[in-house]
Length: 562
Image 1 (cartoon, rainbow, N blue to C red):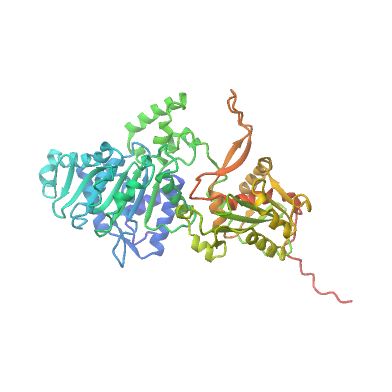
Image 2: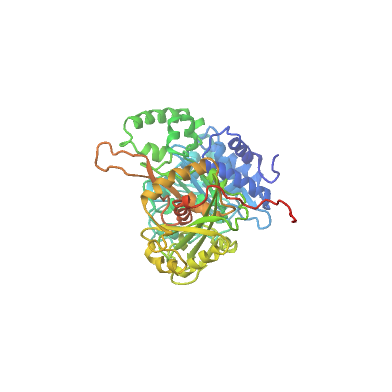
């Protein structure tokens, strides 16, 4: 059923992704689902007349035709509005594309649209920012080359005037200008839109902040972030990817961000060239580029250690990336099934944290034959230095009772043991498991409620070898949909940030072999956490303390009178 408030040209792309006529990354599939939900549930609309005018401008560029993804992205970013306020629904675009997809051409076309009369906002300057002059000026030069095409120049002079370094819309006096990544002298900027080209090169936010401080002086302020993957980790690119993951898979409100992320879903997909369009949605329309990529692919197969750019830039998979997610997010979502009343059941308890000044998680783990039920709760210290980096709906989680904010200098051990002691009134907790190196901080408080490794022998100090043994069980539970966690986005969030790390390699040896054992680590170190999942892992290391089968409710056999 077509959506009346969404332009059919946008929806055609969405339907092609949904029907798999277009092979798309898991992120693009999730974005299509998110966008469809927004059009269904929000009072928004696409200005189809404006989109038609913008598409018309493209004919002056050396494009044979616009690609479907370009119409989808620009239609949502530049032509979709809230019906009441008439402001952009998605003013911030994060667009990751494989090299060769037409990033600079898209920036050039979008910029020409926004300084044209069809945008209609006076002095709506478009500032294209990059680390070096070539990247900043390339889209500007693309616009100039289009304007100087002999058959179009006479007509276009009515709407634009230009030099080799800038383009001005004559009616709105809006300027397209390339700017290098030098913060000095940028305080006077009055941008309508700021475009960041190749943000993978940014190591911090200093220049981004300088370039965006001028936004808001003009109506409809917008940001566009265009990039391929890069080699700098823990910078703005990784932060944006983390935020996008939270929006697309963890129900974080998008706050006006449109994350269009094109990449392979995993490294193994590279061996089937039909998957390459996941990273480069323009590829099916560019046979010359396809031939070049086939050559690069064969060279990469022969020398992957020397030709890392093929995976990093063409496929948007970071070079050397060995991340193996615990499981797909689709499997994680299947844990969202109702937990029955487990009163009186036997369970184990797992505790995990990095610092008690940060996040602490506790997991109560139950088993009934192959089905595992988990009740998970976390505490977050209000003075944690990571809070500004966490892109998650913390207040909503707090309101739902899944996360407790602790307004203190630390999460005191008694807060944790009070929770466990309250749980003991409802469930039979047979044992507690905690990381060997974390035990000292909680030892006295746990002993107070009856758990001790030496005296009571009901507390296990978890070591990597214990995690290796239980990792295969956890893998099986995900594969067979045996985990039931209720609707717990905190636990899903922590699980989705966890990767499996090969353990037991022999560094420096010729075989340097992976012997098949795994422990767990963080995919993104600072803005996301794994503690909720690692508390579950700890609780499963002592799963053998739980009876194999338990009964959720005693069957009603009626009343017998003697």
